[in-house]
Image (cartoon, rainbow, N blue to C red; front, side):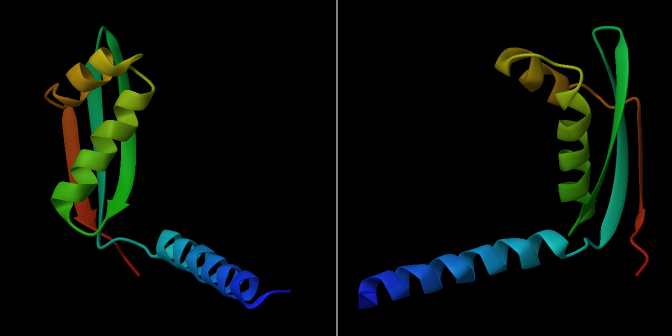
Length: 91
């Protein structure tokens, strides 16, 4: 195999390792957000590095099952949540 092939293979292995490592890291806070949109209700729970990040991701998660299309998704994520709760993530 050529040297450039080995370098490319090494870079790919490092990238895959980083993605796996990053996905296994747990967040500092766990938040649950429940949203009512178009007469339906859904909740999403997410671990995140901060409360703000976890709340945003949980709202997006909840809207994934409620909205269809870009316009609906944007409207759903801007909807005031029916309930939110956050707590520190236990180790």
